[in-house]
Length: 183
Image (cartoon, helix red, strand yellow):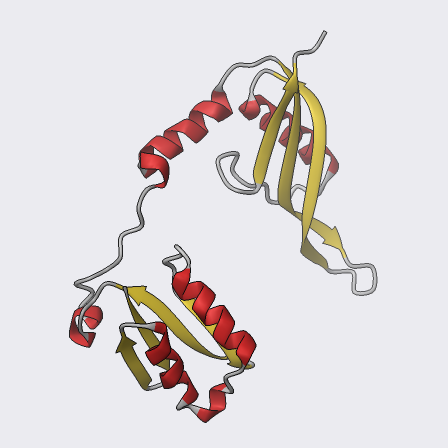
């Protein structure tokens, strides 16, 4: 595993963390310290493959990218892009199908639903309206996760401004948990 580092027009491709730290120490604006060095070492040793950026000062960063590219040319031409291994042998389609199956699975009973949505509220001092992130949690009787979502949105749409925006039930802003059968 190689590391690509870039700070403005200064860039390098190195094969170990020591060379990466030497490169960063050669740039005085970065201000290397022991905490930053430890964080970089932890990132390099981790199984995380997404790029990492570090703040130097407001709106100024340097980045580190893990790559299997052997040369800078290979890296620039994206010939050695690291493929993320699918978790536990599943591919994305299986995970998406599993999430949809879980959402529509018929299981009558009590559900706890959590919804993060954009609520339109009036600011009293200006008289203007703005969107506010709102977290809503409810326990309700439902037939499935989808039914729980539908009941929540129906309830909220009667009580909040009609311009409020609700997320998709398939997205990360809706979560539900089956609590058990009703009596």
